Length: 236
Image (cartoon, rainbow, N blue to C red):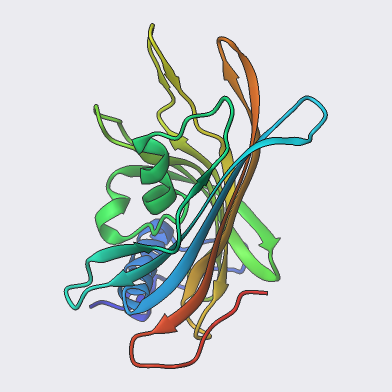
């Protein structure tokens, strides 16, 4: 596997990103994906409906332990039974796909070709000096889902430390609407080197034809444990 050290470009000033920034990020993300596949973790999903006054009127909650097979295939084990008390919102296959694949997106070499990126400057984020990239899908074919938003990448090692955006496309037809909130995913360094998602949150109003519905989403990723280790990483 090619590490980021082998992808350097000519020297640039602190305010000038490398010309191949997106590729550097993708290579780093590929390394992060390979490392994350060596960890189990717990994923706690809470989705709430809020009324006009911001009070919770319905809630869905589930807890899953995410493990990986020796072939690095993802497997989920439900902890207890989901509690579904939503009143107006109905969770769909696309919602659960986004929870697994889009909200904790890892923008690997294999994923990068699906996206176009634009440099948007630099900005401190979560205590890191970061480059800012806009990320948008090149095209969306039927049945595909992608991330559309902004990522913050640390200047030193090209780790994604935060991402903000939305899972797309929104799905509207004459018979139904399947809408998705804008969200933020925050990452933290697990082993001092690789950054994994620790929380996703959203508080957005979905504009249905029948009327707006405010949704609050929280996904907590906790108890990261390496297969061969007994230590646990607990996000702060």
